[in-house]
Length: 127
Image 1 (cartoon, rainbow, N blue to C red):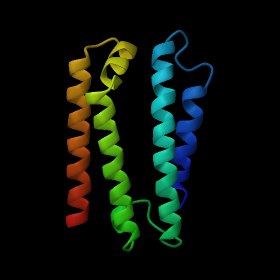
Image 2 (tube, one colour):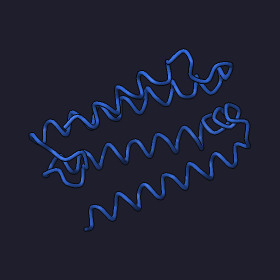
Image 3 (cartoon, rainbow, N blue to C red):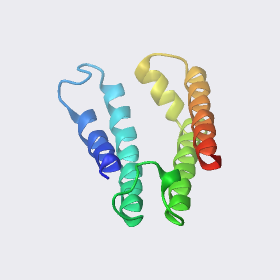
């Protein structure tokens, strides 16, 4: 019942821990930016989960309709924003600078993660 709430609290708190990534300010800033987005995303899923009735599974594909479709909409929105930020804005460059790698590698890995997330999510809805 509190899975998505704990995810939100985790992403709000952990990137701000003072001992985390000492001397790696660029990576810390990326974690804070991503953490804010993931926390909002998780809080929204938690609210939809509460709306679906208690006790509800943390898996959106197990929620009753229309909450199931709202959960799917949140996931599609999240993937879209991630791709937009990574491919069309400065997200890949920021991440690449923070972890000291090439932006093309970051873009390929983000695309792979989104495609695998879509496949995983999609097969759950079909089953």
